[in-house]
Image (cartoon, rainbow, N blue to C red; front, side, top):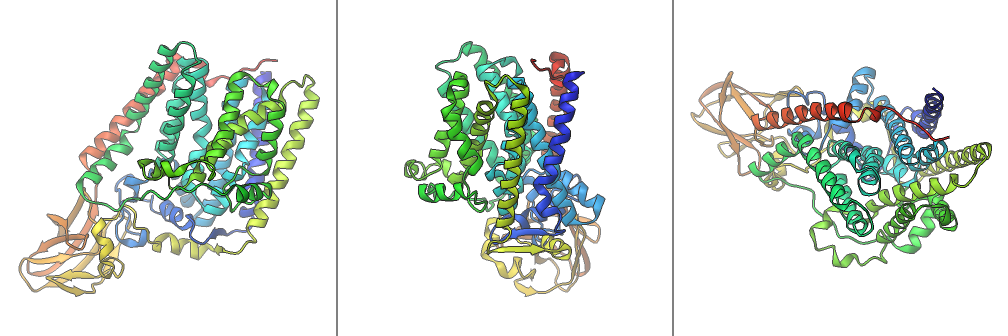
Length: 540
């Protein structure tokens, strides 16, 4: 009972801190965004989830060309934002409330993951606030508007907990890694790749000094296989479409590390338009080094993993040997800062609360740190929102941009060479460009035409994917990819009404069903094999 009471107090404090975190944006009743960042993209994603359970394509977002974004960018963990939109009828309110919800979830996950490792309330609470208020996470949310990566950060402590159990502790609790990786799969695929790279590197290093190597490897494989089957509903439809037509996919970038001088100055200034670990973690990293004697060997290893990750994000690291490999898909070396933040937050929270026997002293230290973190965060966000390049969406603008924002990733590749058709929403009928009236719902694109030529070839400005259905006067006809990189079909002479819509393919539905069944089995496994998953206990 005492344990539950302490957890309840922690959760109430976390809720309060979550509100303080997003207060600078909620109280404005608008959405702040910066030029060339991702805010508009994710607003369009949210509005495009209205029909996601029945169709992978929404005609009222991403410019109206029928982008199958929901097949290529996982959406399940974003769906609560759409539910908030339905509940409030206000995209701004839904967007900002979702960030509140996300911050709360991030802090709760961080708290319980650390508690499971160290069984200490103060350490868990300290880790929760340091990680969730970290500069890099605030950069993702307030500057970049990178909603996908921000959600993926919420599950990073779960991935960490799973790896900790498999590599260093009770390897039978491999399912935490499965849970964290699966949630990341349904959120942000690039984060899945980065997670996998870090897991591989840390395992290769750890394998030389861990015990029970065979059992740990087996349970790592077990966690991986469960993750794969739970994720079939994402991977199979995406692979199916990629093999069906040639698509424009995001390209890797030139991997240049951050300048050390810029890194230091922006970190010390806690500049949220930069990509460093921030002032608090920088000071805490130095503090932890001075108190490294209070850390276990594993904790020290994790601490130096954080330091090396910071190093790897700078130009001191020889990125020129890697930038020509497939690893350039990560695009920016500063993405490693997420992992440096995780590792240093972990080690820092332990060093800050270790070897202090008086609980009142620890409580005062945690309160002092919390006040400092909140103050620096609030000041930094306000400074960011007064920088050049900041813009504001009001309610009408947010709704408008969510529908009109154009994004060409995962479009038919050839369509990029024909903006006169795609962007201008022109039709090409027997080689002649024409403007036609059309109407759309979320799921259906409709137009009428008086066809004077029998067997006329009609090219539309809509993208073409597997699962597309074209109806002419209520009868299904075959469609295909035109030389313009858009949908085309043939029509008989006379007045015609054309409806174009999508259904999930049989393979997509089958993969979703398999993942759902595996999820039920996974839940059953957790409840039958380890009922303690739902319980927490602490040492005095």
